[in-house]
Amino acid sequence: MTAAMVGAAHDSAVTIADDGVLKKDRLGISVWCSIAWLALLMFSAVFADLLPLYDPADTRAGIPNSVPTSQNWLGTDSLGRDLLSRTIYGARVSLVVGISAVLLSSVVGGLIGMVAGYYKRKVEAVTLFGADVLMAFPTLLLAASIVAFTDSRGLTTVVLAIALIYLGPTIRIVRALTLSTSNREFVLAARSLGATNARIIRREIMPNVVPTLLSMMIVAVAGAIVAEGGLAYLNLSVAPPTPTWGAMIAAGKPKLDESLYPVLVPGAALFLTVLSLTLIGDAIQKRQARNTGAI
Amino acid sequence: MRLIASRFLRLVAVLVAVTFASFCMVALLPGDIVSSVLGPDATEEAREQAREDLNLDAPLPVRYVQWAGDALRGDLGVSYRTNQPVAEALGERVWVTIELVLFSQLIALAVAIPMAIFGALRPGSWLDRILSGTQLAMLATPGYLVAIGLMAIFAVKLGWFDTTGYTPFTENPLANLKSLLLPAIALALEQVAVYARVLRTDLINTFDQDFIWFARAKGNTTRDIVVRHALRPSSIGLVTLTGVSIGRMIGGTVLVETIFALPGLGRFTIDAINNRDFMALQGAVVVLTVGFVVVNFAVDILHGVIDPRIRMEAAR
Image 1 (cartoon, chains in turn brown, yellow):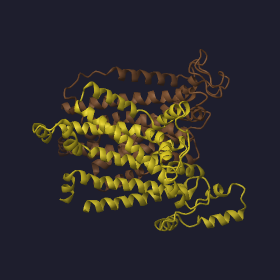
Image 2 (cartoon, chains in turn orange, red):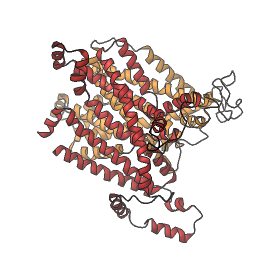
Image 3 (cartoon, chains in turn orange, cyan):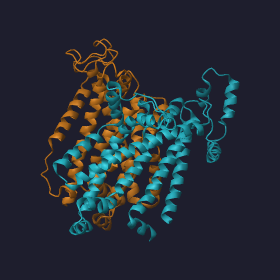
Image 4 (tube, one colour):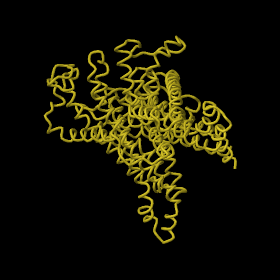
């Protein structure tokens, strides 16, 4: 996940060079499909209670291990629960955890990183050391241990655990962005006009850091959703009976020889969601690289 | 040399901080260690004895120093679940994970480098666009999904592989590689995309530099230019990423190990977490961070080897 973030950042910084010509700013069909999928997913997750769906825990929704039929559009799992309904309710957990974990780590990590990059010296040394320590823990195991040790498998714990994964990388990236911005002339100009540090951070640094951070957040949400799936697979995400994609996949895996659908349906939902977010993030980063290159 | 020394000091500091942090985390978080060792029905005497054995009444820093002193001598304590020395258990597990990681990196690089070269030779061509699209799709596929997909196709449907199980290398090298092939591919796929994307952009930048034009003007073939002139200066980003990934993957194999039931380090750690096996977890954290820290250190040094300019800067 983190490697992917670094890779994407590395990639976007030099995209100008490979195209050569500036293309017209038009989003490709793949990006529109991605937006459509995410919109559909969010809509059905938000309004799941109002949609004509089976109860996700209802074991009498259909025949166990049924293939897609007119009653169960995407089939049923080994207990006879409706897969479409479970996948939609599972999307709630994935989306809430993915979005709020990244928001949390971006706000906290962004502030810390900006302060570190702006004030430099000791503040910077201490925060970077902290970030290094955080990043030395293997990400998934860090999150897993937090959920396991606090013994609470609620939504908040999972969000906090996953936010912690992204804290270290966010601090490092924002600090680097701040560092390069604070060396620019307009910051010097603001300072020579007598602007306070707080004002410089707010008015000069933030507008230059936030857009890049936002585009990275989209890719990070994809990573956070994957991480939540991983935790759920290890039985360390939101507790049952709340369905989650990871837990559905884990439950279906030992019975793969009986039926593919219990794994295929949540797996495909996960894949499409992550792919959509990656495509959108990629397109935004390319565009940003073009725009900064044009200046 | 000064650079190396300062990096080294920093890494040792990170190591100490990480082990201390995990030490505190286990000790301070809710959940009584003694009841998880002995079970809820233990007598008061047995509990008292266990507290003494585990030295739980000493202050935290004292316990940490004691533990660290033992650890430096290679004694990581005894797992109170299995009564096996932690160092011994880790020794058995760690090779499975290292082999798995190296195997998957080999696959990833073998696929990613040609992909990057073909993409970079003609940026924007249909081949490049197909390759980039494939890479994006790979980037978007979580490793555990790939693992289950591969298992469903090759192990369950076609029956070419066993779904689970692991043969040690010393027992039967071929069966060993076979048992690791699917997990390694699952781990490699995401890496392929990351590596190929980075190397491709670096190669494109290199291709535009004067010395490449000069080599071309001398009449070298494209193959010669790529292999002898362009690849080395373009590979710094790739080397960094490979290093970072290896460091990360040592702890990131847990899902794939779980799916294929491999007795590796990731599985060991997650079991220790779930069982609150304090000593085992602490030992695993040491091995994981040492691995991460050492790999990062090696990457820093490798930079200097690949690119003399970095060596010069450091010397100045």
